[in-house]
Amino acid sequence: MNLQISHLRKLYLSGALKPTDLLRQLDAEIGKEDSRNIWIRRLTLDEMMAYVKRLESKSIADLPLYGVPFAIKDNIDLAGIPTTAACPEYAYIPTVSATVVQKLIDAGAIPIGKTNLDQFATGLVGTRSPYGACQNSFNPDYISGGSSAGSAVSVALGMASFSLGTDTAGSGRVPASFNNLVGHKPSCGLLSTSGVVPACRTLDCVSIFALTAEDAAQVLESAQGFDEEDAYSRKAVAEVLTIAEKGFTFGVPKQDQLAFFNNNETPELFKQAIEQLKALGGKAVEIDFEPFLETARLLYEGPWVAERYAAIREFFEAKPEAIFPVTKQIIGGATKFSAADTYLSQYKLKALQRKAEAVWNDIDVMVTPTAGTIYTIDEVNADPIRCNSNLGYYTNFMNLLDLSATAVPTGFQQDGMPFGITVCAPAFKDMQLLTLAAKVQKHSAKTLGATGLPFVK
Image (cartoon, rainbow, N blue to C red; front, side, top):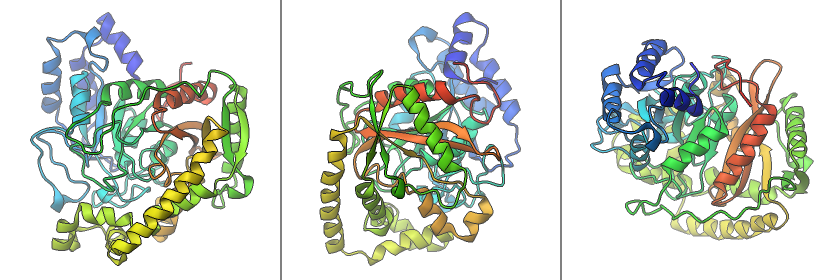
């Protein structure tokens, strides 16, 4: 099934398809088996049809996401359905949906289920879950990426048109790269986090996975908006065009600052992506990536990990045996930090922010690999901390530096595993990044996710 939003919309407007027909077919195709550990709780056909019924009296033209199926990471609330954060003992049943979920439902979208994740959104691998390691959409021996694991795989396999993830350290971008998807990490505060189980509350973002950058942009339009109930919500700043149609300048880390972790293919794939950007009118400029790397190290090596502890402190102390072992090791390590450590790290971050700001005087957008390599599930299980750390090399600094970012597919390894780049810019350049990502995708994409369906330019 082609679940691209634009494709479904044409069918709905022409009368060739009704949401009831789509959902019946989708429910049958997904089936009851979940061999890749994508879902924590799928909605039944009757539960999905209840949302369809609400659309019957609505105008298709008035609802930009009319009849569009979407999946929800299971640390984001959907009314009446348990939220587990991949910890069964933590589960609760919310009476209202997260603000961002309700906005999408109001725009006509239909939730189809809650997806598997690295427990408490702590990880970039997708293996840290008592519901099973989520398997990659191309090859089940490989990781899906995380923590928004099932959210990415569900879209890549054609089970949903788009999905919601969260992104604190890369969880909305790494799984996109590993499953041939677009993953957009919005500016901090652009999408409400009301009704989201926090990881690091000061840094958390709700992210979007989609088959195309154009679909992601359409979802972002419906999902964003200032939320009085969310203390970290920010009013959007009007975008001033700097990532131009032609003549944009993009920064690339110095050669000795790039890391591919013994992968022999990804360096060449990254070079090819740089050439693609040049073909689109971009000018490459070498930048000093060190301030970004130093910032990235603060996220897990510094006291920000204590935010993860603070988010679930009462539960962590009451039921430590319920925490996934690797997750417990990471979050439990937060107790070693003092208030003085936190202030000292805040001072260091402020200095790094000032250094990093200077980069934007010379470039419009920065480009990196989304991840330098990909691992098998066995490799991650054998060395979980190191592998996860390597996957965060190009992602962990984003929210600490208040950047917006879009991961976009650009190629494949010889073994068929996807590779992609991330384009990032200062906050509130979201639509410009998605516009650039759409051009990159049109220049390089051949298929949609792992569906095998052709990407139509």
